[in-house]
Length: 139
Image (cartoon, rainbow, N blue to C red; front, side):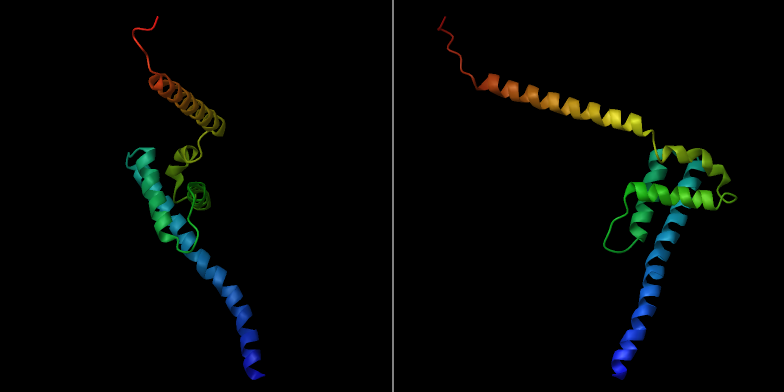
């Protein structure tokens, strides 16, 4: 009976501490990821290299079963910059590049999809044409 009470009291403690432990590393990773991104941008690096460095750091630091998506990492960087405005005041102008224009991105994705479909159709037609045999003496 005493053992059951010990387990019963241990469960709420674990339920409270587990999320705190799991999310602390994520907060630190997002904070340092923002520092990496903003420092590189301030140093004159382009968006892509700064983003790749920050995103790879955030992915590496977050443990667990699930991966951090690019959108989550961008949101972490933005949250950190907004939360610590005094520290990252120079970085606000670069935040718009973390979330590009969604309409433009959607349109580009559609164009790319159409282009690939067109290539597949052309390839299929070329294959069909090359499989036909021609008898040069048949008129």
